[in-house]
Length: 114
Length: 113
Image (cartoon, rainbow over all chains, first blue to last red; front, side, top):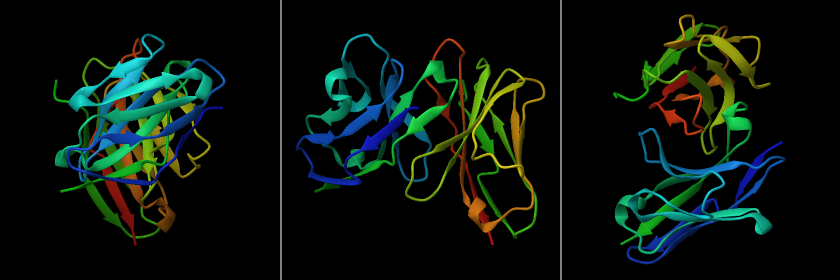
């Protein structure tokens, strides 16, 4: 069975400083991993995905994530936070080509301080 | 490509009533998924269709819940005899069979009084 643990429920950073959102996963297979973002009153938007190609994945809006199999981690980073990055971020794992649906973490609320 | 749409966006109902939600996927997507998201939690998988066939159902999908996708296009999710615990955001997503990336609709927020 697959599972996801987002290690921080809230992360607060100052605008212009780096962002790190931590995620660990558990999977019986070789999973696909995703990060989705959810802005208030908006739908879930895909930031990036890892599907067993390059371990460093670049996504939209300057975000990237590194897949580390030995640590079962898939942390999300951004070099410089922007006010518009304030949102809820979900780490997601998928097995069997999505046949079991996506398994979401509980989310990390990113707060950007001016 | 107009994205995934859901209707209604909000629904308030009284306990014991039945409600039905609709999802229209991206037109060429043959897979359609339903999720439920409660406050402060990530979405949880309920069920999915490949074309018109319902292939997986989560144990979260009690007997009061039923989903259909009769022509392999839009889908409906019905909740019978609603309970206050059914209050949540119900999300729909779609994908191509050949790709794992799911595209989400805006959701239907249900409040059961």
